[in-house]
Image 1 (cartoon, helix red, strand yellow):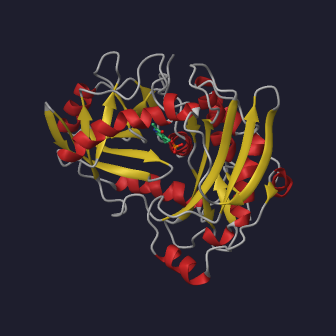
Image 2 (cartoon, rainbow, N blue to C red):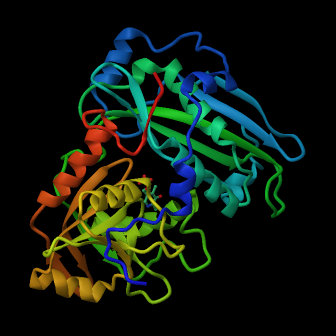
Length: 384
Ligand SMILES: *Cc1c(COP(=O)(O)O)cnc(C)c1O
């Protein structure tokens, strides 16, 4: 089918992620709040908020809910953040039956707190859950857990540009059972961590090692699900890339070992000298990023053609060498948008100098997230 790159057909996640949510005030009652008896003291809180890193400190509360086959979801609570009791026989520790999500709460200039496309993440959480033999969580519980924890821990939402409260919903097989089948007792949790920029040096370009030896996902596998196993399998290749002096590893498709897929936790985009933008097509082995989706939508609405394609690595390298490809960037919730300045593998080594386009994409997205530009898409959702 002819595609000028400007039409937009919503994916299943985009469609479900576009459904209207009840306001936060209606969702906050779903989780029973057990307030922290000793919240972080003022001086320690100041310390935490003044040296934000990624995912090292956590807010005072967490959400928990339990699913049991037959009963469904029950015991929804918000309680003090802390260790949980888990049987050493819990199935997740043996077979990795778990899924997770990552989104952020942003502080706007007027002090209000918002999150970005929570219904998209809720829909993806459930799509991942289905693939991993886990039960679906009602969207109202997913967003309700976020609302309850963020409202309880509002002071952990930082104010400076580039900072946010990172939200981590996750679900795992807590049933103590060593047999191999989907677990009959599941735990859902939501924890929050005040964060600064993911990469310490801002929009400085990263270097990428393209591995020809390892794959993160294969046809029919779990590549489209946000599950720990995909990350576990990316750790060794990431280490190999780091030993060679590269910041990140990029994976090719497992079927042909020749097409660009994504990084361990970020999608990739290519900018051509004629202004066209390309990104790998969702084949079932790539994770459908919310950042990827938002960027495609915004670019098309600004008149930039974006096509989702099979991108052969050899052709890409040749096109970088001739100057036909002028920029590349990676994107995801944690790091937002990161220019790729250097791409190498066993048989090539190329540099990508410009970052102007990437900077514009970053600015447009962050402005909507931070309430500095209008949100024509209804992506932002008010929590406080
Ligand atoms: C989470 C993730 C992304 C980025 O998704 P966002 O919704 O944009 O944060 C990309 N690739 C993988 C493998 C991921 O797990």
